[in-house]
Length: 215
Image (cartoon, rainbow, N blue to C red):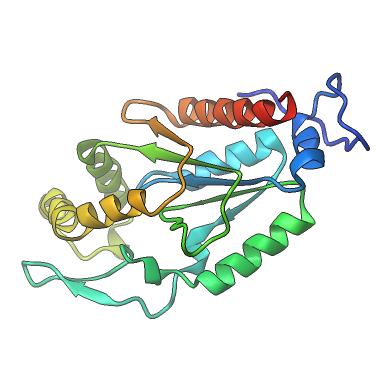
């Protein structure tokens, strides 16, 4: 796994100090990192590994989804909770908690599906993980099969259900999502392991931090 950094906090940044994040904090005073991807990629696991490597806090957008999500009806009559909606998140609570964690810690990783620029403060860096629909369906199918009690869909209908949801709701939402977000870097993840994805994100974050510290 990626090299970890020390927790020391110098009064002024010293290039010989191994903790470049502290150097960044001296210059910018905050470090807010967004990691986004469509639902179905195990962002929680990836971002926990990043949190351990970088020694900064992590927060999930998912905990701020509203309890009263709107329902939408698919063409086959099936009703689903619409998480593909910018209003599905309580942005007031999200921003309050993100701001508090950002002020109280030397940095924060926030992960989730959507970070529209008109709802949030601009991050220092936002990395988006891109995946093909086919690979995404594979991951979602595996998750559904492992959590059958949470889904009311027959095994043989899973791919049909995923394709229908994507075609009728998610595809347009995703296009809007990309257009309405500040994104610094896209990473294609189709055939990469979680460790490979984590290392690539880590390297992009450190490269960005170094571009500020060594400017």
